[in-house]
Amino acid sequence: MTRTLLMTGATGALGVPLLVELLRASEFGRVIVLVRGEPASLRAALLRESPGLDLGALNPLTAELGSASAPAALATLAKVDCVIHAAACTKFRASLAQLTTANVEGTRQILAWAAAQRLPPRVLHFSTTCVAGQRTGEIAESPLPEEAGFVNDYERTKWQAEQLVAASPLRPEIIRLATVIGSARDGHLQRPGAFHTTLRWLHAGLLPMVPGDESTRLDLLPTELLTGFVPRLLAHAPEPGGLYHVSCGAHGLPLGELLNFVAQKFATRNAAWRSGQILAPVLATRAAFEDFRASIVKSRDFLFNQVFESVDSFLPELFYPKHYATARAEGVWGGPWPRPDWREWIGKVVDYALDTDFGRQETPLHPR
Image (cartoon, rainbow, N blue to C red; front, side, top):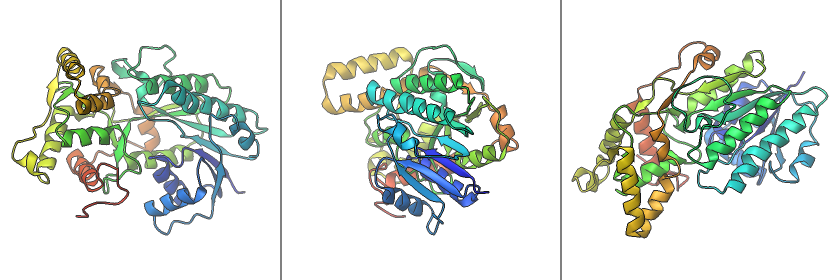
């Protein structure tokens, strides 16, 4: 019997490589994907990711979650066996209204539709480790019913979406995902994110200070960990209310070493870095970073204020050190996460960022 998957967020930075893996696996004979734009653009993105991929199971459905028209579009669907809800607005500087529409109302619509089905589907909800907000220490693979403060409204609205999921009678499974920054194979990412924005400003010498100290760790992941985890989870029997951290856990990347490594990579390709005209940023205490913020605002320098506004929506997260328990997720994986040499992988991410002007070009500017 043909099984049907409904996926949201397929056109996103992580949706494309994940959808490629799901189509390759052929577990679902019919894969319905919600798209906001032309289906042709999704097909083109999938074939760029995996030339020759069989798209026979792909069934795009034009709909924008969170909009008033979305429930009518969802109502045309029937006999869906599984839902992967990965759609979200991930722009940290988006308005609260935009983030609420995409992250909260979109989730509400998916849950309402799924609960109304005669045979409700299995639902996997993509969340983020950012829902922990200003908590510190170890974060368990369990619900976070109480607010603890947030660095930005993206964190807040994703936490609110989790509350809807936790309250649903469907008892969906939740995947809390750390920051995916690019492929371990070649460093590429479908769409740049906050990490790539930070790299851009670092490369230009416009970010001389970063909050944190030598003990600060970054929870960064290669794309392949996500695309390998989801098919494994689908192969397991559903665990109602199960919650999984796809995260580095206690093995985050050391911030100081990472910054020095990136500086060395920049120096191999940029004369200003080689000559010492641009230096690696210093690690700053909270007080020093606050003073730096005040000096930038006082200077009224347009470019520096633009840069600071860009990174100030997420860099303060580093003031709240935490790590995420991963035992349940690694149990699904079948053992400890693979841990490739981070320097080799990050080197590929940095090279790809430079080759594509930090994601602003679809193809490399200077193929190596």
